[in-house]
Amino acid sequence: MLDQKIKTNQAKVGVIGLGYVGLPLVLHFAKKGFKSIGFDIKESRVLLVNQGKSYIRDADEQELYKVIKAKKLTATQNLTRLAECDIIQICVPTPVNPNKEPDVSYIVDTSNSILKTLRKGQLIILKSTTFPETTQKIVLPILAKSGLKVGKDFYLAFSPERIDPGNKKFTIGNTPTVVGGITSKCTELAFLLYKTVGCKVISVSSASAAEMAKLLENTFRNVNIALVNELAQLCERMGINIWEVIVAASSKPFGYMPFYPGPGVGGHCIPIDPYYLSWKAREYDFHTSFIELSARINDNMPYYVVDQVIEAISRYGVCPSKSTVLVLGVAFKKDVEDLRDSPSLKLLGLLLRKVGKIYYNDPYVRSIELNNRKYKSVPLTKIREVDCVVIATDHSVYDYKKIVRQSKLVIDTRGATTHIQGGNIVLLGS
Image (cartoon, rainbow, N blue to C red; front, side, top):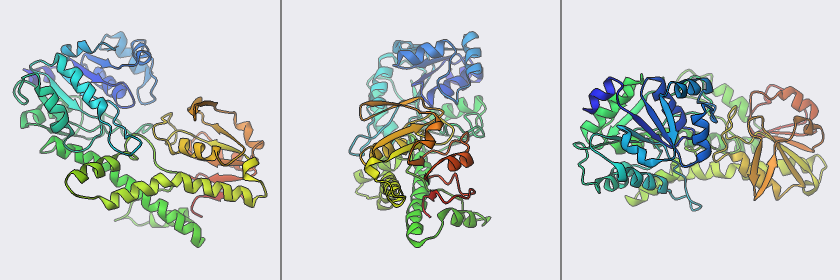
């Protein structure tokens, strides 16, 4: 019985997709004593994992090497080995297309791959962020083609990933896990699995409820970020410092939590989930106007920042089209190498059309590709040479006092210089 295999760590665990979610996840299960297999279509990832080398900051390389050496974890491109797994967790990308519509093709392709080897006694858990009813109406019909019965022959559930890249305080081990299955037995087995590896687990009534919970979490952040982004623009017109306002409001010990303005939102979930939710809502003749508005506000922030940059450069007596600009930070958030949907990349692309020459520096990202051209991170000494420095990602390793001291003009989109005095600083929303 699968429940006994889980309780005794005898179940073999497979994770499909060894990215920012999948690699830390499969490592966690291997560390807890489960024999695990990581699946990925990228040969480079498979080779690195099997060598015990981590390419993701949240997957500790020493721990990875240890479980590889102990033969608790292996990686492969061979999806026929899914037949060996008692539990299969799906961690594949769920992007939006250029029209901001959900692209679940990776989930569909993965489900079809699982179908080829699906056998009795397997538990399938979708972890990729998606719209409600994906598990029930997209994954289940594909797996049902096997002739096996869900809840009896095989089990299917949704459990949203809750990875926060670079977060040392909250990890897979201490972040509560939500599970919702197609049947009560599916939920029970998913609950048992995560409880066995030390997670606090919250069960909900269905896979769709678990899917909606994930969208609520991220839409909550998107809406509140949009609120402060809009207020930042208002404060700039009124001559009020938004950063000072946020600090003052944060003194209230109840009914408030701070969010901060910036050049936009990034990462896999926050800029995408509102579009997943609003797209699904239209199927039920419901329009999520408030949510769609917040997404538009955040999407528009790079354009607002570019306008601020061009205005500031002009005010300092430099022709924007002949100016040189250095962007500090291209990762979507501080202290990580993650470029997924980073607003800094959009900002760079927009600036390329407006200024003479653009450079970037990021201690975590050696090179990027923009408009079919490769750019390399330049040394920070470039600060002295350029007309303007734009702080787009506020990495902790930057010495902001030194940056301000050496720069002709600093546009700070992250509030990194709020405690620094300097007539050459232009703060977003002030």
